[in-house]
Image (cartoon, rainbow, N blue to C red; front, top):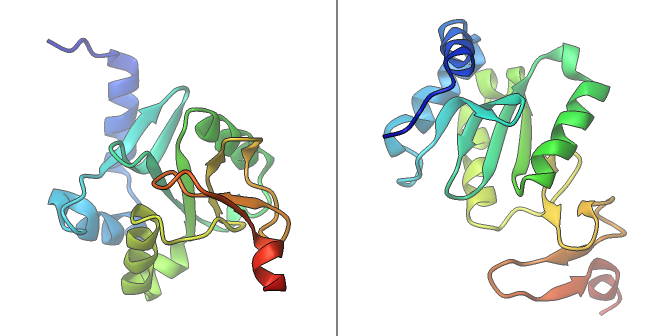
Length: 157
């Protein structure tokens, strides 16, 4: 039997009860394995933080952000922690989820399939440095094949 951390569980329940419209709209698409049979949970505790949506199997966290998150130092610290735990972090603006939910779901699916390259709002843990640097300078890493290749070498060929 699992033991529960009651304060953490209570906080997660409170966060689920006060979801934004964007979170509700995305949750409708993710719940009950509706996105290609992949299980997501919402307001999942990960260390001292709560992830808006998490796929534990794929170690993917999806965050929906309002304008208060633009250039947030707190989010950068949070992302660094989540990356250190082996999670990839994919962020969308609330407006994206409200206006273009199909595109948001397609992007999440691409991240789950390993077809999405890291960029400013999609960070993945890398074997060398933890947080992927700017896409033009980083070496990409495919966990499925274990291959490393430099983006700059691809541009030259």
